[in-house]
Length: 192
Ligand SMILES: Cc1cc2nc3c(=O)[nH]c(=O)nc-3n(C[C@H](O)[C@H](O)[C@H](O)COP(=O)(O)O)c2cc1C
Image (cartoon, rainbow, N blue to C red):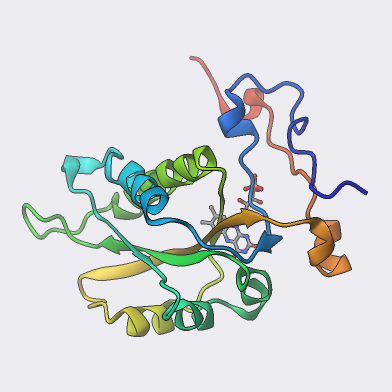
């Protein structure tokens, strides 16, 4: 068995740059740190994302070595099992209302998704991987981060880290760590 899943061949019909095709969401992370300069570049990539009214509703919270375990506690158990070895854990928080008129921003989560993908791809360019998580304890995360839930909501969690040898995973998780596929372009794109 190879040490790492072979994602380079995951879609023989892929047209996009390998940056997109070879991004995936690992669970086997090797305990490591990310230097400050790389973290700055990763978060700055998020900053340049587009957003409705340029409201930039994303607020990104990341763990330090001292807060890591508090972040970990805010994930569901199934995610804690592998995310414990990530270098950095984080939560994407959305500003619920537009800053220019205080009205609800229906695109806040959408814009957070754009920011998430931007920093994910910058992370890839740094040799790192991210793994998004809907499996979070959102209320616990809001309390831990001391956010005002009338104004903000915790959208998702994420892990950033370095790939580990698959043998570090339990056999059950290792079996799940296979390149997954995508719908065909025909299924998602209509040029009308
Ligand atoms: C918003 C979001 C929530 C996700 N939640 C979880 C999660 O709770 N646990 C998990 O192991 N993976 C989670 N994932 C990872 C997806 O399962 C993964 O991105 C998807 O299967 C596609 O695989 P790939 O990213 O390896 O290409 C999540 C991804 C996103 C974007």
